Image (cartoon, rainbow, N blue to C red):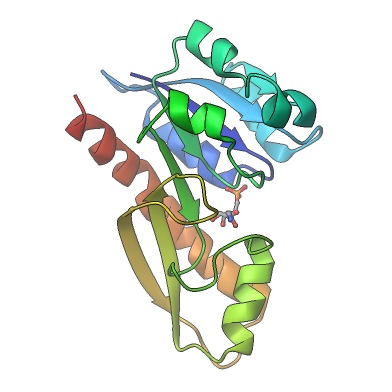
Amino acid sequence: MNIAIFASGAGSNANKIIEHFSNHQLVHVKLVACNKPGAGVIDIAASYGIPVLMIEKEKFFRGNAYVEELKEAGIDFVVLAGFLWKVPSALINAYANKIVNIHPALLPKYGGKGMYGNFVHAAVIAAKEKESGITIHVVDELYDHGSVIFQATCPVLPQDTPETLAQRIHALEHQHYPAVIEQFLLQQL
Ligand code: GAR
């Protein structure tokens, strides 16, 4: 099975996923797709010799959504890891139930447009939540909406800033995302 990772930022989750599958018998990270020139994930992909597909807005939202390029590369499954654009229907239909996302909060709370990265953690802290966490879910046509595959929680501490909470959430993501992807993929074989 060949995976494409879609990412927009630093790529720490992409890094963990690539490492996890680097010697895997059945699952290979074949491609990294990125919409942001200069993003850290591009260097991470290069350091593992994984090709990077730079995606452009016009073609993604009003063209073929890169479906042909992904199919040509033999991609079976798409993993979003800090990818900040909404996934267009053309891509969702071509990979029905084969796209997963990680969200840095306990959905359905703190999801939707504009809820990404530290905006999520700032909202969680402002609401004085005692607990936050991560959600891994199948991607559908709505932001942060498809069926939930996995959740894990962590405490929100009284002295937390968005940055300290982000660190705790990232650790939880790194601990779980690669293994949850593996389990979800192997179930489909
Ligand atoms: C991760 O915390 C991920 O959950 C979040 O972006 C971060 C990317 O970090 N995704 C969203 O907020 C999506 N709504 P990374 O680039 O270091 O993996």
